[in-house]
Length: 343
Image (tube, one colour):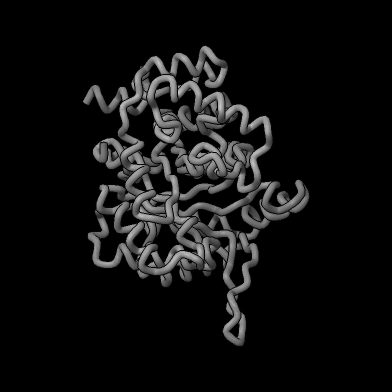
């Protein structure tokens, strides 16, 4: 089971940079919780490493740098060529006098980007990161189209994207892109700029495949990779009390989840396994990164990624109208699973 999660997916950027992802990565957002004690946090990331996972994602926002610090501690002493690490730019953590917690402010300018990168490297204890995502340049984060357009202008006209491009050109970072919860900003970046990767959270999942014919198809044509974050839609596909888009799930979402679960149960398949493996089957996907706050959760994700799933399950989901008929599924022609089997 662990072999499926740890299987390497070699992604070569359009600029010729090879990045060796593991099919399953580790999403570091939960490690930003101050309620999570240090021993448990370290045990969790160590469990992911011991299971063979070699791609770790984090960001300054996650616990005001706490996630970066915790992941950096685990990576200390590990051979640098053995892992990929991504973090994000766009939010600055400003120190506050008197020992108060840092204040967070958006800053997509050149100075903001470069300052954010330097601070992340210090927290991580690394000399370089492999991937930098611009974090949350999207309407839902900034509250309105106008505010989003202002931040997009700051990124593209105040030097933020140019700074990232220069870091990529000189080899200080291997790939750059966008990390968001909406597909439309990714489509815009693909049309207007020169990204290598997108981290898209919660939008291409077993529950919803809206980006399939738009962003995912465009990325496959352009040779741009997609990292799928939030494969459980922030929890609703993983547990009955889980949230959807970080809030209480609407009735129609819960009803759809129940239908998905019923089909999976009929085939003796864990809904979580179907969610992880479906998200990873699209040929544009470089890695799938669920989070985790305990060693048990990390180990469970690894096992679920390798759990056997009959092809008949995917056919049944299509017949029930729960899966887009054009969505790649594990074992289908062109999917990652079929390509790996052919090797």
